[in-house]
Structure formats: C-alpha cells, structure tokens
Length: 367
Image 1: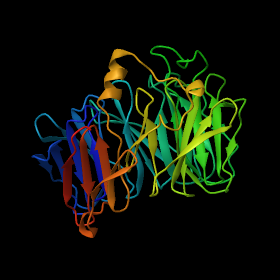
Image 2 (image 1 turned 90 degrees about the vertical axis):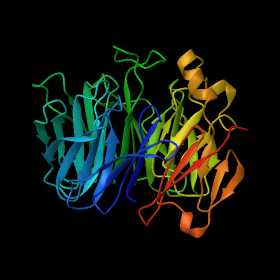
Image 3 (image 1 turned 90 degrees about the horizontal axis):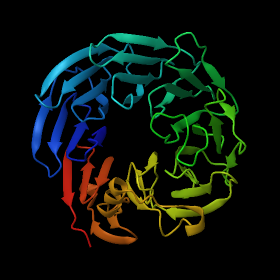
Image 4 (image 1 turned 135 degrees about the vertical axis):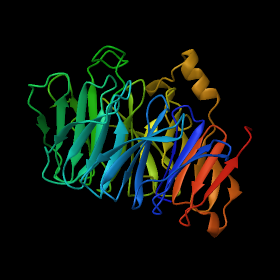
C-alpha cells in the first residue's frame, strides 16, 4: 500500500498501491469504486476540495483524474516523470492540479479541461513539496537544491522570487491560514510562509514583501537533525514541527522562537497540520492532542461553531508501531501482520494500509 487518504468530509477513503489499482471506500470499510487504468504502481492520490474528483500519480508517467460520483475516468495527463513527490489541488475551488517531481519541475493542469497550464522549472533539484496560498493566488515550491520559489499566479508577468537561506534540502513548506479575501493572517499580520530543512532549521517568510525573511529568521533544532514538516496554528501563535530526532512533535512560539513544549510520538512522523480548531495535530500517523502541551497564555483555541464542531468530534487516535493509542493510552494492540505502512485517522475511524496491499478499518467509540 503506497497511500491512504481521506476525503475532505472524512466520508471516503482512497487507497493506492504498487499493483496500479486505486480503490475508494466508504469510511466504515465498504468498497465503493475500483479504478484501473495505470500500467505501473500508483504513488500518490489526492481528493479535490469538494471531494468529487480524485487524482492519481503513477510510475507510468501519467496522472489520472477520476469522477467519484460516477466512478468513471475523466482525463489522462502526461506527467513525463515516474517519481512524483507531491500531488495536490489548488484552493479554494480546485481548478488547478499541481504535481512536483524528481525531474525538478512543477506541472499545473486545468482540472475542468485537462489541459496543461504550465510546466515550471525553477529549481536545480527535485521538487520536494508544493503549497498554494489559501486563496490560490500564490504557489510556492521547495527543492533539494535548498531553495524555495514563490510565484504570483494572478500576475502572469511577475518574475518568480527565489528564497534563499536554507543550506540543505528543503523538505516542506506551508502558508499561514489567511483571512478570506485578504493577504492577512487571523492575527492581522501579513500572509506568511514557513519552511523546514535537512539543515535543522525552520524559517518564516513574508509573502506580501516578496518572500522577505520575517523577524524570526529561523528556529534551530537543538540536536541538528532534519526537520520534515511544519505548520502554523490557526491563531498564528505556534509553529509545530516534526523531524528525525526523538520521534516527537515540537511546538514553538512563532514570534520568539522559544520552544513551548513537545509531544512524544513513539514513531517517526513525516507530515503534520493543525486541525481547524487548533486543538489537534493531524499527522501521517494519526491525531495528536495539543492541549496538554501548549500553554494557555500562548495559544488560543478557536471557538467558532464550525471549528467547535471540529473540536468536539475529534478523538486523538494515533498509531505507534504496534499500538493504536487514544490520547496517551494504549487502546488496541496490533499484531505484526496488522502493522501499517500508511495510516489515516479521523474522528472515530482508523484506517491502516499494509505492505500486502490490504486495508484494515477500525471503529473506536468516543470515551
């Protein structure tokens, strides 16, 4: 099993594997669709924001679009790369599909027509991650060449900005969650970009100033280990990071760079993001509760009705090597044949993808 992903509404699960087959499942484990068409292993799958389209990237050098409503193929797109690093739809409406590859390119397709919009080669090394700003205006990419490139998609004549500062491959980039229709953050500040690298640093960049470094230039990991993924909290007061050292998630004060605390994870985490309410971190190994770690004076949990629903329905389900954990407690022991290569967890559902290509669905009742 190469990937397991949840639809935005958490009602569907998509899985991909080296057998070139993609499956879509209902959240309780009933199979909905089987998609065949690729001729080599499928490495990435991604849902559009409305959950109606699924994209898949394969070692056969194609990207395919599938209609989730009808179960039919929409388009076959030529990626010209058999080693994709990232595949994602643009916000807020999913009009563009972006693919970052080992061939140092970013490709953009129009999802409605299937036409190639642009083939961008701003880097000298593999593109390791891509991010769109929340309104879809800005596109950022990072690379093994230690650079980040920022593009304004609303201005075709604008030159890309190359952001330099890291000294090793850049692993991940994320935009802050700007207010709708504005290039500002929820705290009233400018739209920011955060990056992390194998050089053990985290850096923030001011998008409105063309990617200029922000006041806190970097936060250095004490053990000088690579940092894999970073994310802003919704209130912009914290930065969360995960890396290769200690199997823990670190929480930093964004303005001062002071470590606020850490969450032990018992296994390596490669990617993370905050939930809408800011109370949880959603990772590639499940959900971690931020509340016992973050200090009340340094982090505000959002209490809007939509985000409060997000908070109350969440259960901190996390998959360590041999346990499904609920909070800090071991809940279900996993025999060796059930240990996962891919994981998604949301609300009361855990889905484990296995090396054999099979999936295990586990329903856990709220406490």
